[in-house]
Image (cartoon, rainbow, N blue to C red; front, side, top):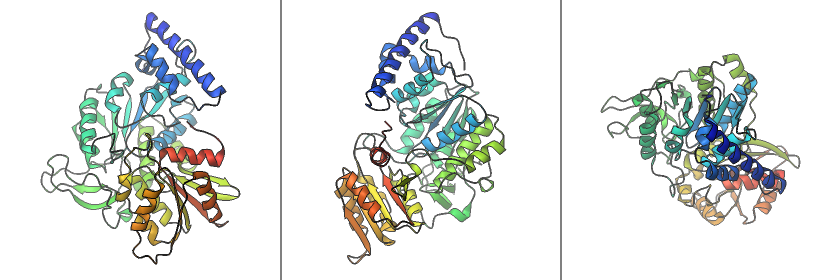
Length: 445
């Protein structure tokens, strides 16, 4: 933290930063995008060690946030808490969480000489690149949120990723603090194996158990011996209160009592995000009063339970990019009285080109409640077929509208939304960016 850089490294870094900032200026001036990735890519070619050289200058350390779901929301909450205490925080707020995106975020806070003047760097990191960035980043805190199946055309199963994380994290300095999700068996096991200081977060609220384990479940077997876990109950996918009857492996004890904490936004998954950020903030010395007040006044990150008013009507965007996340956003929708939902399915690189995951989503619950469902996106007909198969009978009360053109789909969904109700939009990642551009007229990336 805050290490000095050698003179020759400083010269090369300064040149790389100058070029990167010039690229940022050109891209934004020509309105070609937010320049959240390209500057880092170019700077890296000039100075391959740029991630290490920049992260060394962060005064109070790097906080790395990894996991399948919840990274952006957790990072924004923790960033907001620290900023309220007067700290300068660097954060890859656009969600560009691969290596070039991390570099670009750090470059944003760097002057033309390559000097990074920031107290903390909060970096949300794609779960697949964690092993590659841990050594150059040397994080002070690692938040491990969850591991679910996500983009199977790109990533392996969750146990493979967990083993890679464990192997690399265990080589970090002893003073590194790791904060895993106690309710995730693979991450609970990860934390129990590490030599570093480990704090856990999780729920202890049986009233919030699901009625049954959902279809989109990834890890109900013991990560130690492979035997089926016994669950008292599950909160979300395979996250729950568990023990192994074979070897005795059991859920780790969370640092905070979850029932004593309120949560940000809607959906039980945001309770996990709240507890993760709160645990990290307390470890950093922030007082509980500030944390609780920030939680109570938190504003959503773009596309994550984000509320907008469009033409006098309320719109809520709920990013839905994998089975577990989509099941949770469907739960939010079905718990409301609103009857119009727009679902948008794309199969581009940020989404994952394999959309077979939609068959693991409990869309039956959305169809059973009736109302109007508008579908759009690159794979609109795959999505429409999935919803049709979710109907128990042809006489279902669902009003399914298939619209290839996204702009028209949004207009149609708004038309079907009464003045006193909210239009829920459930898009995949690239679809979320398109939806927001249509609604607000501004690009994010």
